[in-house]
Image (cartoon, one colour):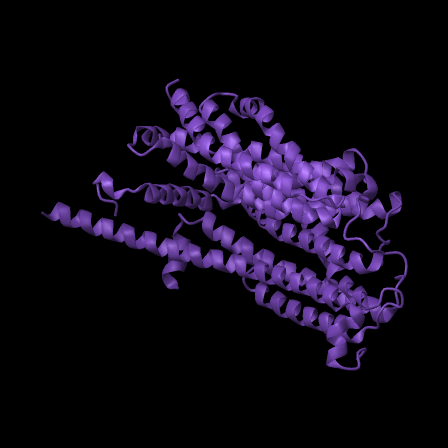
Length: 228
Length: 68
Length: 233
């Protein structure tokens, strides 16, 4: 894992910078929304990542409960704070985007509420891990909560189709062509991939620290600390 | 380049406040997510070293006691 | 270091020492501080989802909803005021000390407010936005909570003091304290609703200030009495 990290970090940095410059400066503004449309280059990647991170956390929880692997516990624990900040970012940028575009910071529609619930779930998992002192039990509790909450993800994804909402439909799908002009969705794609790489980097960073803390009674940790 | 000048870029056609607010929140979150694990690791290393030193001092004291 | 000579421990120093101790203990368990805030947010979220998300409806009830949520969140956090001290025996030490118990209690309540009521007050504008509180009411919301949450902490401490160490302490605190909370709630929401329609709020704020002053003076005495009763159980 240590060898992958620099590679991912470089890719993440390159993609994010490219996407940022492209999205902020080069792509054209939306003819209806003007330049506030550029918030999409943060909002959409953050929202996508917040959901993917939750799926990863739930899968890690499943692996931890069924196969009892400690690494899965640690990955799940590390996902929680990252996912929480990403969900927060998605909600905040969405609200900031909503104000000039639709005149309101917030509306209680299905997708926004489901994203808010996602944030609550993340904080719940994180609180479980930090409150329960026994690591194994904390891991199990967090895994159970992650799995139970996974029903929220399809709700977020399909809420714009099932209910009539203020939030617009998705841009990318596997089967159809994007509904946006290429000059607009290409930097978005770059940002999404960049965010994924960034997520991989910080997940690895966090999990490594978690491994260190959990294994602090072993010999290899002692050698590592003494070597520094 | 979509914008004519740096001033235009910052103003973002009147939506500058919103765009830059959103992007700065994103920056804060990115920085937090990178800094948080790194700081935790450093604190862990520092605590671990202090614990090692304490144990060494304790061991030294015990061996000097048994030698008396 | 503190010298064993009691005359060195002026009342002010005792207050600061106790305040700092509680704040440091809370800092070591920082993650626990998020829970009341999240509860606050979640309770406020329940109303639009359970009743109606219509902005017009919400803007009418926003003041009350935020206040009720703050009240419930404070009530939930009152359990922790004396529990850990009771568990490790330092509460009995406090009762035995020559310093006035009411002062120690007052310091503990101050610390508790700083880590629960104050963050709630700071987070209230966010809830106000989500519940479409009229803009005129925002500052009144914050000020009324600023005056109200310390009162809630003080009154809640009376309940906590009476029930420390009991089995079903949490629910019992609520039963004891909610009747006393109602005046604070009424004046608190009254302030915000008056401001929302543009009426002057000075009268409301004066009353809330008076209630707070009364609480500051009398509540620590009541809490101290309650603690002596509880610990002797």
